[in-house]
Length: 301
Image 1 (cartoon, one colour):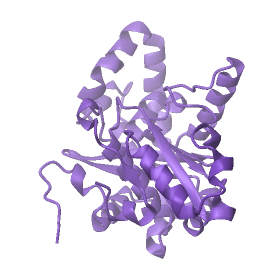
Image 2 (image 1 turned 180 degrees about the vertical axis):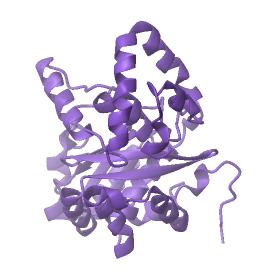
Image 3 (image 1 turned 120 degrees about the vertical axis):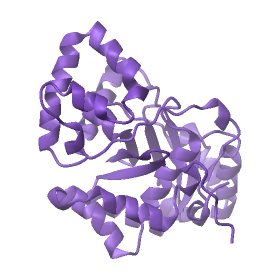
């Protein structure tokens, strides 16, 4: 069931096949905690969630030792960058260009390239319907699918969009049994791409997206709503985890609380002052992601 923040937007998530989706999440401590002396392999293995990626890392080490060593060497460069720094936006554009050259509509990771609203909805037909009717159609369609979706009020999306232009990236946190897994969210047009921080630290600019939120403002002026849906890599995220990340976009980008949005501004423009624990504090205070805590009892009062 969608939480209070989801209900405020009409944001929903279908969880019928949740048991079939198995996450491979990794908790990523601050960048400086991962970097270490020598080639960096020892420091990487010290990460409490290294085991979840051990097979892929060892496979890379065996099949492409030069590439592996090169990535380990780049870890010192990561250490010098602000927390969460990445070339994700450039990577997204690069992958789009490659996909165009191959004449494909699918980008790396299986995500749909140029996922238009027309590919989901008959836009001309729904223009004759009210905003409430469109909302019902959208929610009914996606309620049978394992994904995250939303109908966002136009004024809320205006606020998010204006802030995204000034602050296109942010660090988000997912509660885990062992602590938190950090994800970097990077806007590319009206798409919001997420990938785990440790994925960026280990793969650099080649780190692919693990979740993409697609926002459609085509009906914003006429109907006063913006439609949203998502695609995710089910090897790394399940629906309720993607839902938690989507909720945090509202928490940090659509907030009326200046102290909360100030974290986004600090991350983008004063990175040396950014404290990742402040993100966790805001997340805990909001109650978002409470259901992701193993053994957590929900407050139903």
